[in-house]
Image 1: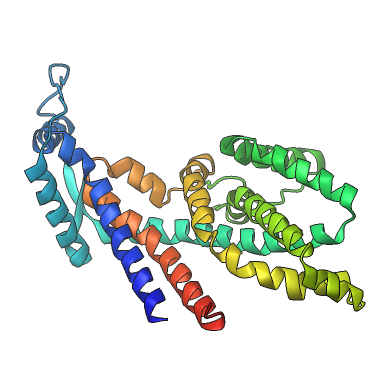
Image 2: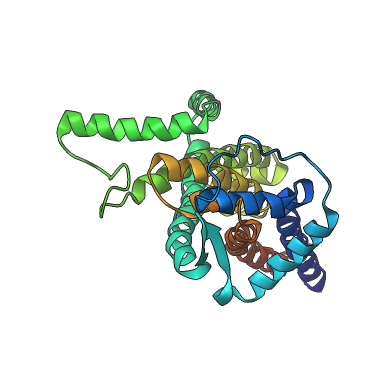
Length: 310
């Protein structure tokens, strides 16, 4: 248990360090002070022609280290943290608290939905006869080859087509005025992670089904559904948990696309709009996205370690 906790602490510290180093990279390769000064002059109208400005790549190690120090200071006192936009500085917390919870709800909802639906699909798949399994595998493979944007737009168009055909709007398809889309974004962002979970469990459970103890259990007359849930699924659960990092990256890579297409002003659009001019804001936002995932991953790792000391 202590060894696992040590590994988790190392993983946490290295992840935070990686976020800090990555988000401050623009300061390392550009003269960021000059760049930001020119940006302020343009935003305030003191400079209306920037065609003569050049931003050559140069190594600014001292400025980079100063930016890292500044970012850490901002993280330590979020109540005083500000970010620059259009010639003015604004307090971070009011704006951040408006965009973060909404994106987090989509992210966590997509994670929960992909696990629940993926596990359910995998169990149902194992009940089907062999020829139907082959068809399901081909369908999963075909959907996985589709681009993420295409899948999101296809889901929206399906809802629109259904509304035009029946006059019944199943779900809101975009955020408009006081009308918010909630269920459809979660459903959409969970499609690819669900396929990943399903495919991983299918392969793991099929491998488990060929083991001698399953053949022995079948010989004793135990029903297939009992074997699938009590033995196969149980024995693959810990390995599935090890795939949560991949699921996390799938969800994160689709979050910005989701916010743009569904007209959701969430944390990813917040980073895209202000992160370049405010490296510390990008770092804070990425850490805020990472923390819930780490808490889930750490809790699950400690729980699995306690239940299975091997």
